[in-house]
Length: 411
Ligand code: NIG
Ligand code: FE
Image (cartoon, rainbow, N blue to C red; front, top):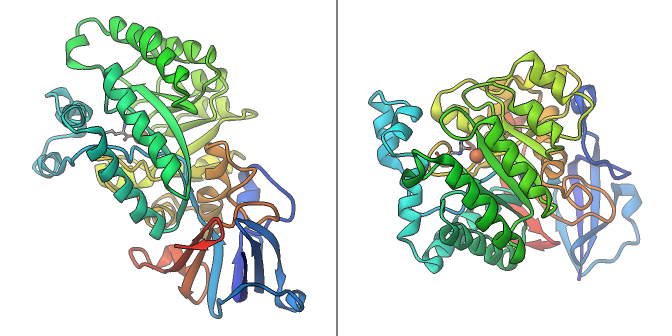
């Protein structure tokens, strides 16, 4: 099956050669072709260029994208989309004056979601989660990382990861799974956290590895959750299963988590709302992608990750949703891109780079996703008629997506 998209007003994020990420100044450029075509065979981009070069191409199907933009689908490298129920009461409690930390301290937050998940069957959890995945595909997400971390017991963590595995098999978008056993300390381990760490290291990790349920490992490295030493224990243990890390750091406090993650060659460090110069220095010359989650800052009213400072230091930056029931009940990457421009002062070019190619890097899939490159998967957004690509982040809250192609097929 072949598909030809013609008369594209502007084809965005065009990369002739395969690049794995863009950093610093390079992020200011979003290569594009005006009045363009893309030719797809089966699930792969095989050709693209200006319209005058598409004469003679015969396709099974032709899509006329006059006045519309085409760009790669979003690569959302950080989500907790597998969860049970919601936490709208905590949302109201925060409106009435409690903080996210207050709610966690009284046993709510992540522990609240863990309790609900424990009482939800694997099938029901799958159903709730795949419904969310299907919704975000329509919003232009074509690759998604999903974390466990609302199980907090071996049984429930495995249940979550099996659900992620089913989603991986059933959805056409690319999924990567991350084991986040160290998301919060369960109540019964409150007085002896080391016992919970031992459970993660000696029971959960071996089982997760044996069933091949995770691509990455994550830790919530934060005051009141997991310390630098706790995080190091888990990262060291994960090495024997060849699990690279993607770590929650610096959401509320900066205390050396970034340097620790870089030392362990983490694939990404995520959140970074609190970021100091030592953190920036630690990231220089590393392979670790900083990831900002502006919808989380928006929803919790906490500082935005200093994305401007990160990029101006010559570093790369990725954007992701953090979709979860507590801090970010939204999986809308279009809102993330808008908010990065509006609140973090990224230019539209920087934000689109951060949400496509750099997002792909942050989930280890930049070879096949994140840009319009021959040989990459044909995961594409076709916008509604828009005046320019600046209009996409500018018109925040508006749905500018007309069609989404995943693996060359219209959704
Ligand atoms: O990334 N900060 C840790 N984990 C999630 C929130 C989890 C929750 O509140 O349920 C986050 O924001
Ligand atoms: Fe998160």
